[in-house]
Image (cartoon, rainbow, N blue to C red; front, side, top):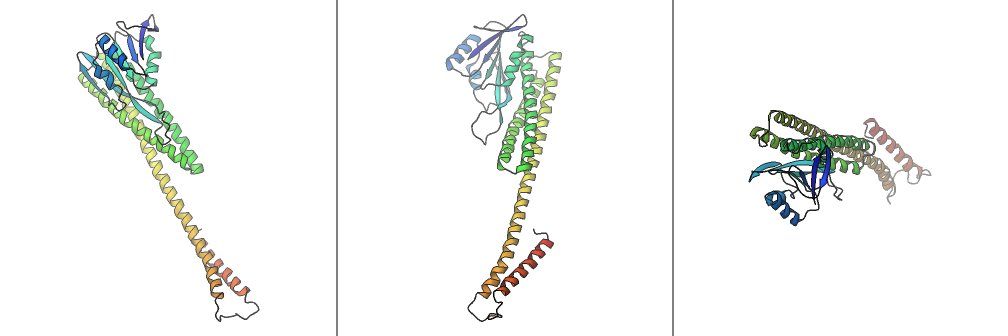
Length: 312
């Protein structure tokens, strides 16, 4: 679906057909006919539109026929029904700068473009380079918000794991770890692309705009550092829980082994006194009580020894 937005007197108006100095936004569902129509209408290479459908597209930029093409990664919630998938993934936003328009293509619904739409009335469509950087700004804000949410959820799952030791919390922590892997990879790629854009001045920025881009690079680096810190904390936590679980298992096995030894001694005494051979006190009137008392004494002595060694 193709949306056309125009800024009129500080208000964002959706119009039916493209005009000069507007924002064109493509959102799912996509149709090949719409791609062909938009490509001919705005003189956009069709490959730029088709590349936006690849969810694994890496952040990059290029220029062809004086049309600039930029891909940046942004976070979004994962709507997969698989319980083992990550809570959050990253998807590409494709930004195309034509002679008179700015075009964004979203393979999935995402919050960065919604935030940009909500603030579009404050933008100046004629300053297309600044509009691109405003999209970058919304992407960085999205990463920051999702990282704070991830850290909050991580603390909740860890606390539940301390209290219950269930597999469900471990699986949730694993899903958070997968989300952080997506974030670290995307943020690193976004940072490298922005640094390259700053070095080559791909957008033809003036001094004020270059300073704004530098601030965005710093914010992206901060988000990347946060993601790395959370990843390291989560990895250490998972390793610690693995050691705790292994240690608890060893303690349980040690207790079960001690109990088995204690119970095996009365069985051994009873087995000896159950043989069809002559044994001491076999004809005594206390022959029934002697093996019982002997078994209990041996069991108590062994149990006391194990408790002294703290095997229980």
